[in-house]
Image 1: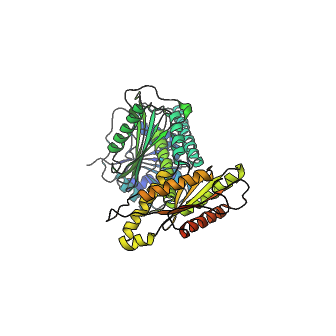
Image 2: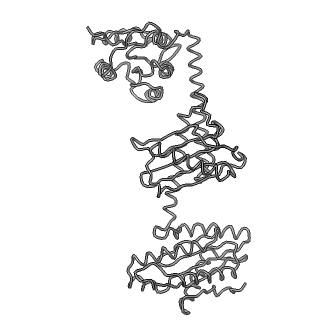
Image 3: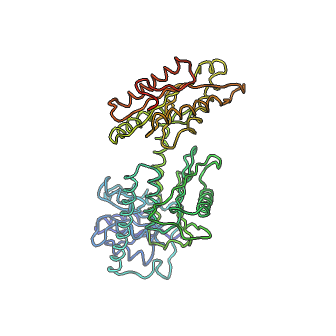
Length: 492
C-alpha cells in the first residue's frame, strides 16, 4: 500500500481543526494538528509535512509570521502552504500572498474547495520520506522562534526602507542622466563598486549606460564599456550592435576617481525579464571583484527596483524626445522651440540679456519637389538640417519651423555676430551639392534676423514676427541673402 501524504493542520480552534482533519483523513490523507504557530513550527522542524494548512489568526505566533519563517527555511520552502482566513477577500488575502502562501482559503469554505486545492497542490508529488534527523536542524524553543521572527521583520523593514529611499530618489529627478547618477550613488553606499552599467531594450530601441567615476582615465572607461557589453550579451538582452546607443555618465565629483585597476569584475548582476524576453540588465562592477557578503544587503529586491526606476526614466526621455523632435530632420519641432523660446525670453528679460532669432527658408523649394520629387525634397531638408546643426553653437537651439522653413535661437549674441553667422550659413548652403539623381542640384537660402535687447517690451512672439518679416524682405529683394529686422539697425 502506497504511503499517504502527511498534512499538518495549525488552528487554535479544536472544532475547526478536528473537522478539517476528519475531512482530509476521509480522503486518504494522514493529518497532524498543532494548536498555534509555535507548535506548528516545532512540528515542521521535527518532520516536514507534504502540505500545511494554517489559520492566519492564532495566539503567540500568527499564520503570516509562521509562513514567512517557513518560506525562509531551505528544507520547507517548497512545501505547499495554504493559509486560512476568516475573510473572503481584502487585505488578509494580499498579506497571505506577500507572506509566500501558495493559497488563501476561507476557514468557513466548502469541504469540496478545500479538497480540490489540496489535490491540486500535491499533484505530481510523492510523499516525503521520514528522516532520522530533523530536516531543519535542532527543534527551536519559543524564545528562539521569537528571535527569528524579529530578525525576519527587521530584515523586511530594512528592505522596505531601502526600496522607499530609492523610490524617493527616482521621484525627485526627471532628468535621465541625473537619475542614473543618483541611483549609482545610492547603490554605492550599499555595495561599494567602481562602475555601474544598465542596459535597456524594448525590442526596437536599445541603449546601454555606463557610469564611471568622476574624471576616470581613458583605459578605465574602455574597460567599463567592454565589461558592460559582455554582461548585456551574456544576459541575453536583444540588441543590434550597430544600432545600440552607448551613453557614458560620470559619477559625482565627491566620489573621486577610481583606484588604478588592471581589470573590472562584476560584483552583482541583475537581469530583468518580461516573460521570456530579457528587457535589460543592471550590473555593479569592482576592480577588487569582491563578492557582496551574503545577506548583508537585500539585492534581490533592491536591484530590480533600481532598474525599474531607471527604465521608467529612460522611457520618459524617449517619449519626450519623440514629442519634441521633428521626425524628418531630427531637429526640435516648432512646439518645443516655442516653449523653449518663451522660457529664454523670460530669462533674458529678468537678467537684462540679449538674444537673436534667425529664420531661414529654402529658395524655390517647390521647384525641387516638382522636378526631382518629394523623396529628393526630403533629402534636401535632412541635409540642410545637418548643415544648420553643425553650424549652431552648443548653446543655440535650431529647429524645423515648418515646411522648408527653419529657425535658430542664439542666446547672448550681438546682432553683428548673428549677421556673420548667417552669412557663413548662407555660403555653406550655396556651396553644398545636395544628394539627388543629378549632381548639379544646388540650393540657396534666404535668412531673416531679429534680436531682443534690454528695454524691448514685446513678447518672444513679437521677436519671431520681426524675424519672419525680415525673411520676407530677403525673399522680396532677390533671395539668397541675409536681411535684418528693419526696426533695429544690423550694425549695433
